[in-house]
View (cartoon, rainbow, N blue to C red):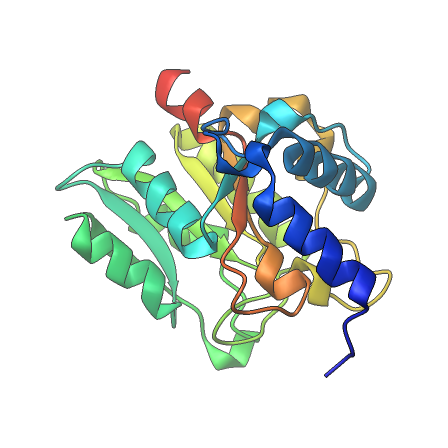
Length: 219
């Protein structure tokens, strides 16, 4: 493990003991952190972001659960690519939201197909979830695939929940997608992010969403 410099420890101690650290912050999270993440996302996607697009959460699993709470209700449905990340299915089950499996076959590299998804949608469906790079398969969804799902969701009045927890594990120079170049993404796309994965500190339970969940629940 790297050796911690005494100056780093002193800064942490001072921050922990500061009066400002004991107060109640903004509901969407510390503004400085939100501004920093917005600036990072703007560089990563070559698209404009502001702190008002961002909400900080206690881990990305909580970000997902909060998103599902805002986007769907008991008896409604959310589509998950299968095989799926077990925590996503567990959260939906706990909330009483039905899971619609979207089969992803090894023969296609576990890449989901928007046409197949369209055929599986029901009147109760409220959102489609994509994870890329994917957990558990490791599949990296091509930008064209992500764009096709965004178009499907827009056409059907659904939310696209794009979990990019492992976005910083993409091969160097690889383009994730171009969804954020269209300002209308805020109308039906919710991006999920994990600080713990990007910074390789799994015990650091801090995640984020873009678009802010408060805007979803009131917009």
